[in-house]
Length: 418
Image 1 (cartoon, rainbow, N blue to C red):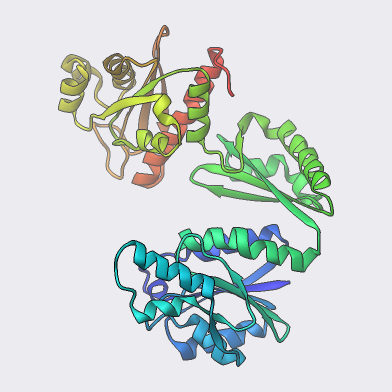
Image 2: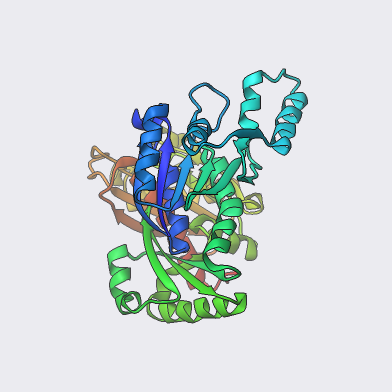
């Protein structure tokens, strides 16, 4: 099965938003062994959309649309497809009832154009929308499969994952099972990781292995196909063991894990509390931790001490130390970690300071970063980073490196991972 993804929306062509939906859908289809050879973006224009559909039909038998299912006049995806295929539009009563109940709940009148969102292609299978109003749909006609999905990612992603994807699996493999497992690595680049496991990648059949790099991390997605769930799990486990025997030292988690979630898990498991003093990261370290449910059991608080005066007044760092070593220094990072731990009475204090870029800061080149760690009962430890990315990339990488370093430091001191 070959697929083409057609994203509908003039805002995509104007550069007002990025086409993240195509990236997500392509990633999902690759797990199923479905080839995606073309991404098309077309504006809110019926004639141009019709032309795009005709071209897609000539080179793909699965065509997936994102966007254009809303209530406004420029939402014309399903109307254009209905006209092109010669099918009518009918109301899906479940979707219509949901829309009516939503407006009743917020005590606002429902305008007539909102009813439009409940229209579906006659004869299509409805894809329920549990995160919005407009349902999606899947229609098979003239040896092609058409899937229509809403534009907002928060609606599209769960709809594809839990509604459309199982239907595709059934069509591709009957009752076959397709399972995926993601291995997450940190501290090793994509090229180096691939080099180390190249012989495994070169000989892959079932399971297949797909590398992906993002934000300084690397993942390997292992996908197995079988008629049995247990056999698929066994195939994945065997390949996972083979990979980790080579690069296991860089493996930190699986599937939906993140460095932040694994650190929080470790802190909670060992009943440790943490606080942070942040300069260049300006609260990003704590913000990333705060995305993890249950973090209140370990994160006590912290301060953003962006300037020298803030470091002196909020943390009590001696001006003489800053005058002697500077604010982008090993000594400043260590003192920030110690002072914030004492200020909040936590088991661990973390201090982050540096020159995020693009300009030098405090006489230090852009990308120079120091991270300090103070663990109760131990002398403070520091790590220096020399990064070369853009400003905000450097800030995020500093935070992730702080998570990774801290987990390794705690493990060295005998604290257990969950």
